[in-house]
Length: 330
Image (cartoon, rainbow, N blue to C red; front, side, top):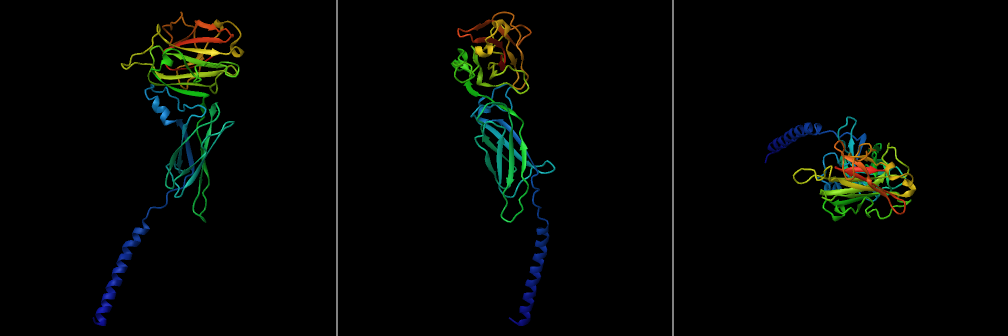
């Protein structure tokens, strides 16, 4: 090959290289900028998915946002957003730290948010009953060495109750039908000064699907007698055909047992239950039933003082009749 031909070949190579550079450079310049850093966090707490699934046939709105008790799991969802409220991510892992109002403690308090993820879910539980638990999530990024660490972002979930006990019961369980299903998960066998109140539900025709019984503290904002506890029953009280399983002449019932240290004064007829058919509604006084075992035509629940009684130890057994899932206390 002549020197002239070699120079021409090299020139062509040089021109091709310049052309390739011209093509590549604009593409590099148009690469997407890094995503905006998170500036805020949204924290939501919901019922553990497995617990919610076991109660899948509940009427709409019956299940509270969080159904949890001491030691039972609940779900904490954490989402990161930018200044415009859009999902935002870190390009490196971040540590999520959960804290809660005392005096109890959370079982799980830390988790890792993977690089490039804008949200995660953490399953945890709490060690003590409370009417209003508040959970805070703080997210701290851990960038590579010699990289500026962005500020920690945090969010606070809405307060929710943690009950003393939570029992999941099949709607056709004999315990529900024979009146031995207690809100304390032990049939309310012990009611004393240390355990002053407990409710037993009786459903002669059972319920459809899974049900839940819980015993918890007085709701935030309600006017309660000191040491009073709330029994909550959640269940679908309609049959497969959609008809009500219970009627005003054949109702469901709850017997609220109250220790004499709390309910030892006055006759049985002087007591009324505080009641609600809503998972989050205010407790109101359950009116008197018109007759034993009968709910009035203008009522959906009532206090049956004729069926109520004083027990041998002086404790009170107050019977409330109802048609739908409920929360009740004295």
